[in-house]
Image 1 (cartoon, rainbow, N blue to C red):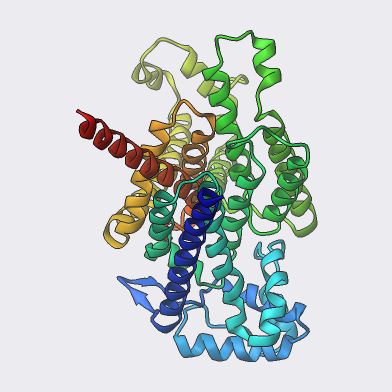
Image 2 (image 1 turned 180 degrees about the horizontal axis):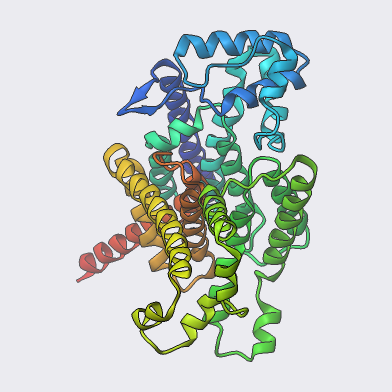
Length: 441
């Protein structure tokens, strides 16, 4: 009983300190914000104009919302320029730009904007930031780990990147919290349960109503699922597939997220933000359309690219036999591809450059998470972090927005906290064991 009481006191202390630290971080963001090294660290962002309008609409305060949004954005000097003063024109300005499907954040924010006005749009993101920290921390303190979760959670609060997006009127903090909630329904530290399926399905649906995120939901379970198969390769193929504890999570998250995505697209229109891919497809289509019919006829029906890859001849020899018009078409295709790849690389390069310059706390958290994932590589759940991290990097690259400051990678944070906390805990245990051995020598 005394041990239980001691553990409960330590858990309460860790959670309380993190909540206090988070409250101070939120207060500092509200008091001090603006431009930092050319980046918009304000609490109200251009993307948030329409989210805020939707929330006021749900609250039945459309006219008040337009007035307050315009006054606030003019005061802070935002480049978005606010909304048209007419209710109908304001509605049209937020229609057809791919935001109508992101209804969950404005809907949850409606009660808060009813009470607090536009600052109410910051309530859900701030609470999402806190929830993202408390979920992995809570899982670990229940297992008797305290120092690791306290440090990892503190780093997630100290991060200027996470705090920048955690107190802003955008949808990404809410998605981060929804992703963090999957830790409550996944077979981590315990066998799977039947009602986990419902929880994961609801989270995936909620994610589809927050932003286009189906690759993240798939990656959460796919990484551990593949890892479990590879680590259990000594079993027969039939028993390995049947006994994999990640079968149902993978099936539910994949199926629900894909179906939800397609339904949302069919109702609200295409929500795909893969601008690099869309730009590449547009340039390729334009190149083929601009090519003369005789040029296209010169390309074998099976596809010139397939023929080139199948032959053992050098590309230069093939080029000498290829008509000039066809070479021009191939050159356009190569230019479109190289431009898209260079833009994607520039996005990733800039992301990490900003990270190392602006946010050492997040760098430390990610390094500790990588160390934790490596040390726990024998456990399937450790592969959630690298899987989601790589997917979010890819999503940021194909979005093509340079200098977005790790916004697309927010969904990695709960898994980074989990892995970093375990890594710290393992290190502390080793130090204690070493000290104990030295004491008895």
